[in-house]
Amino acid sequence: MDWNEAILIGAIVSSTDAAAVFGVLRGSGIRLESKLQSTLEVESCANDPMAVILTLAAAEAMARGGSLDARVLIDIPLQLVIGTAVGVGCGFLFRYLINHIRLSATGLYPVLVVAAAFSAFGASTLVYGSGFLAVFVTAVVLGNGHLPFSHGLRRVHDSIAWLSQVLMFLMLGLLVFPSRLLPEALVGIGIGLVLGLVARPLAAAICLPWLGWRFREIALVGWTGLRGAVPIILATFPVMKGLPGADRIFHIVFFVVVVSAVIPGATITFVALRSKMGYRVNPRFSSLELQLVQRPDRDLHEFAILALSPACGKSLRDLDLPESAAIVMILRNDEPFPARGSSVIREGDVLFVVSDERDLHAVRKWMTPGTIA
Image (cartoon, rainbow, N blue to C red):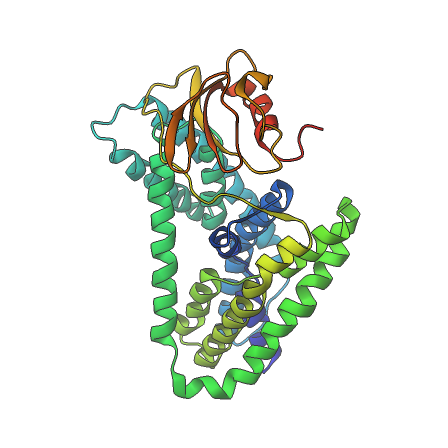
């Protein structure tokens, strides 16, 4: 394996998959602390554009018969800056449109959000920016603002995400030749083990202490380097370009993805609980929402009560909630109950709260573990 091929493989497998991590944890009824969850989400979504840029640059260099040059040092920051700017612009533009356009059918709102993603990708690519980063930033801007039918939008896009994952792994299975796997097994498994057991833990140990992170937090971040659909997609780029050794690269990536799924994927739940950076939650949630197109002063929010939630074990009248907030219903064992002042909140309850957005932080303090002494 020469240096160009090694750089290309490194670029392909550099992308991690936070959705895979959270999918494993969610299936086990585990939730990470918000600090860790946010970090993994940002890391996963931010390193995807970087991996795409590096993969394309390395593949083009191999196609020319050369190697990466110093222009990459300029191209990467430029594409990231342009992609971010386009994403912010598209995000605010489509947030305004979604909140002010009255569509004839509620099923058109997910279509409009998908149009926002395609518009961000196309506009960013047109001006030599990172389309993937533009889509991510657009989604961040949209998701952190008020959107009509937001619960329905999340369900639609969650379905699209899972369908995409299934299709990517199906494509992986169709492109892999079992007869060609064994010769690349040693290299692929070796790369996967080094990435999961050495490279990522070492990178976390070097970078995170400077930010004041504790050892347990660093250890968990170092262990959550699962690879998912993105390396599979990137591994097809050399194949489509017809590069020499492209099939070998694809089969090596196959083993890297499998190793990252088997070792960190099978143990992440144990590590999260052992490090006390994760806690068990009730995985059952409802799908109740206020279907208001016009943005109201207040909105309906739902909170799952955990054993360590400050509200657990207290009656509703004991909660010092803002005047704008009111608990309107309690979901207990999938049965709805009216909220009364004498009602005692139990672990596993789901509370439906009508609250002003400005007072939502004060409501969350009662629902989130560790926020009230």
